[in-house]
Length: 123
Image 1 (tube, helix red, strand yellow):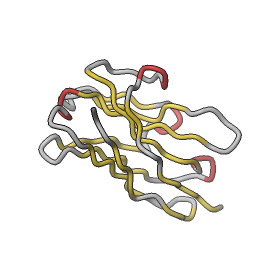
Image 2 (cartoon, rainbow, N blue to C red):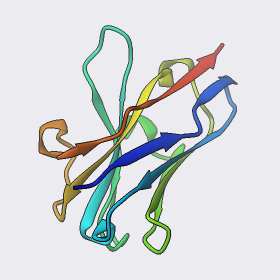
Image 3 (cartoon, helix red, strand yellow):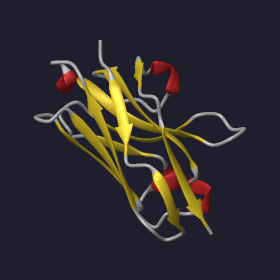
Image 4 (cartoon, helix red, strand yellow):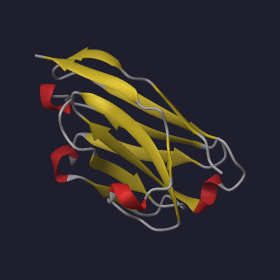
């Protein structure tokens, strides 16, 4: 079992930055690929970024390339999402998720989810 708790969301103006964090429980955190997803009102949950269990492989959605950076610290059981140059269309609830070993951008393949943190970008 892995429990995930996100933090760091908030209200920011367009062009600003936020750093999301996800704290994970469990001794096998380093075996899990960690992903960030987001869901805007009335839309499906969509992939944002993922990082493999060693941190060696990173996969970003085209919509956030060059603006968002995912990272992890296996010693502290945490994963972060640094979000720069935020746009109003980035407004959504952001979720942290975990899947054992595989690097994936599919919502259905992730086994564990946090409760989400709201990010609102004003124009």
